[in-house]
Image (cartoon, rainbow, N blue to C red; front, side):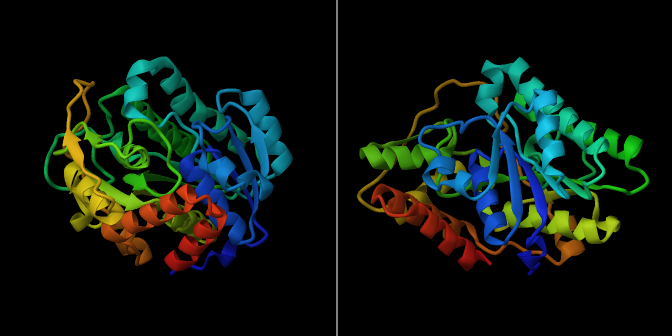
Length: 348
């Protein structure tokens, strides 16, 4: 495996650090000895992993809007980062339907703003834009999308992330063709893990129902998604960012997802959660007539595997076990930082 000791003493700028993935990422980075500056809005949920795990104690945190270029640039220039990881986004499909303008402003102009900070910086060597598996024009076919497939997400969230990809490609070609900054994007599948409290995500819905001793409501039990534990893509983001810094030939566009065996129907995923949680938990199929969401989505990760000799560490069963372990630690009012450190160590 790639050795995260590379990050010891490195100055890393993380956008979206108060979110679920951002909080786990900051924990991994600080455990590795990185000097992290985070830039984000306040945590998007209550409770939040960011607060529960006291992430702010480990990093320099700036609360700001990615749409606010002046504040972003001031914070960016003060940090003088060597590596930039861009996670800030409006990340929920159904929220994109409710607030499309905000979704585009955040996901598209937010990307423009961070690219502008990098364009005018002399310190940055490596940049990774984290997007999504939903950037592709979804044709509902049964094989995985490859990196050269057409980018054209259907809904405002998915489409805005397609646009974020295109912005990154344009800046890379227009301003960084000399290779002074290595630039990649990572298109990740659905992530699960302890500490996700978002609305309209299946595993947080499962945990909330379990807490209340209620049946889990599943909207689309037959939709297929590439599920993976949050540490899987985070490790890949850090690997790509480091490797492309050392060799610009690694700078590219990568899918990050599980093996085909872990592309699960939602109902099967909930069955697995129920079996691991116990306590007589069960679920019901209750479609709520919501807006269009893709029914079938898989990623072909051959490029990532062949380029870096990478393969997923935890299958979906292990991933669910880790979600249940973390959630029960939290419900028992134990130290979730200790649980995170334990799971990170086990993963590595």
